[in-house]
Image (cartoon, rainbow, N blue to C red):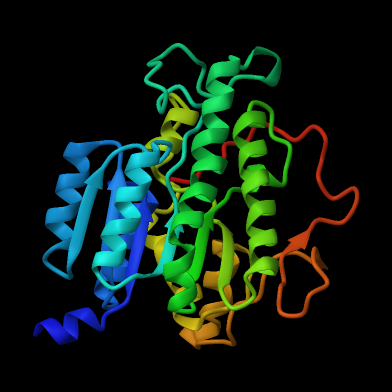
Length: 295
């Protein structure tokens, strides 16, 4: 492939790309012809992912924390150097802020709100909400130039009250609302918030110590649902990966119509923006502590 062909390939910036869903999606995008800028805090795992992805596409890997202003600037510059991002995937996240803050085991995996250490709660919101918004701000000029897309990874803990998931769920609910507002403010872009469902990942195992999660799907089984949104440039909205996969493949493997956002009620009246909110009374105030998973 010559330099001109490479320069014409779209560019995706993927955070949290060293493992789990981020790595699986980066691999799917690479196989689909995208150039990549990838990042995560773990340098060793990121280097392994870079070597794997470099066999498929042009990839720039930059280790660092997305809460760091300078690191976000480096990511935006790297995407610009490849031709400008057409897709931003805000996948990096923290379960409780302790891992991102370097607090080690000082915080329970799923602390109750009454016991959530405030420094770790602040870090949870910084990683899961503020950093994605800040990175989006930096990359928006590139996305506008390419009529691009923003994919924010959400969770059903953003919509359902699970005991112990208050901090994480609240941060993801905030990201959902920010996604909906961005879709209204940037109508030329596509903005998606996606609940990937439970997956066989390190994060889910950390949230469920001692539990057998072998029956959960691998991230590689979920990534095609997200790729469907990108390929189809589906309407801005909040989606569930399980429904995306079910909508895409019907009986006997028949491909069905394009994806539709989850939820019955439009959150914004502007046409073309299908973010949804649950009807009053739909979210239980005291749900069971059934495990949730993202990355």
